[in-house]
Image 1 (tube, each protein chain N blue to C red):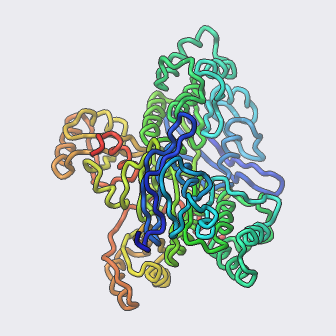
Image 2: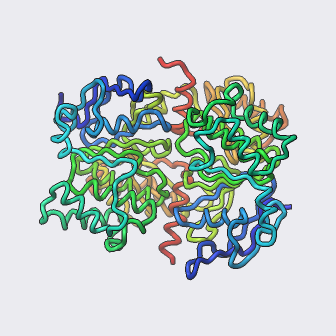
Image 3: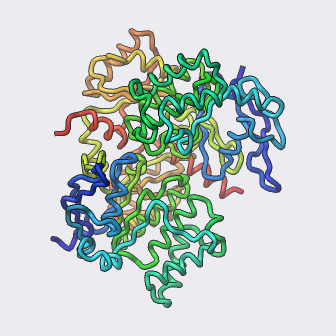
Length: 310
Length: 309
């Protein structure tokens, strides 16, 4: 295996009773990637995370993280990685600084290094002013950022984050991502899971998960190219009427009513765009503005899910 | 007549002003997104509008009833659904419907018709006796919606309704919501997920208790960013980010995947960016104009307020 691979998993499976949570999953993540496991609740993301972190043994399969065999030696792997579960164990009746101190002790971070790391991480998380605040009195977004600070205090090579931004508002979410991009520049590899498709767009590579399996795995840009068809946005005064009029129009593969427009997936945008204008006018919808748009990862997910896998 | 009308609506908790002089005017059949960071005052406003909290100042009416003087009439005319809590997992589909029918005082003579509608809408025909905990997320969510509208409320409050469900199921859910709106039901959706906001006819952006902006997704994108947004790729990425942030005319720059999003005061400055970066030994692609996301708009509005206050 090349030194360049930070996370390697092959043939991972795990059952809970009769439910197969993860089925024969393989993936490899290069050093410095921000890799996203994307899928709805119940897709198997958390089970994957827990196995990769060495806290849940797989039924079958191999895992190597930063050169360490996680299944054979989970303790050794813990020095290389940091895992932030969905409910990260912050002590609500300790202050921000005391929580960090606790994790620094637990990970055996040398005292000399501790002060500097704490300062850098708190500044990056915009939490410097809150050192003395009780963790229980932080907002949801601040708690998640403090969890990340604690998870990073021992400078791991690999960071595993299970739905780190669930319940976090957009402003804190940007801070959170700025930290992840900063870590990437210093060579840290991040694997994170998310149920939010818009968040997935920020990753360098994605695995789309469903029912315990990886359906597709590629960069966001290439996943979008893989989507069968192209997307158009049709804006008009009455988007409901637009959607009704477009049902059954030639070349239309999918329709989605948004707040002030309709997203239309067509087989061939350059060919269909002029026809749709005529089609709408013939059905009493005038003045519609039709423009090609880039598909979202959610569009890709839905389109791939409705097509037979190749 | 407005379905939801608020004038100077204010709620104080001691010295803390959770909702500050809020004006809202929402027409029947509108789907309005209520967007804001944690602690912005979204939940407090919804609790006020549901008649669960008394305003400190101002007035509001929901479905024609005054929230302060007729809170019980308000509650009889609204439905409420939250992703976090709504159904009883250890009761069957039918038992949940019966429970909510009792709660909302649906007449016994109408229960069969209304629950049949809810079951059909949720796609649960034939699974009436299934325990709710055995249902997948999308079904649960549609059943929760069915329970919330059993008494045919003219106004519906949804609290982060689709977090964590499968994209297909989410789209099906929004089809149902749009169908309700087409029937004249007014829907207020509170969320901090911008992709849910895209489904709304209008969006009310709230921050620190204030209404910061209100308009259709297209209007907010077009008017409230305060600049023009571009995308480019730069190597090395970290250096490119730092250089752009220092550059005159650049309002903000953020990393996005393998590229950068750059917000410029003036779109005309865009073509010169690669040349300026090259002078600092950074290679960059030609900037391409991109459509800002609602999240871009939101972050700009909120940080602009934070900077000016």
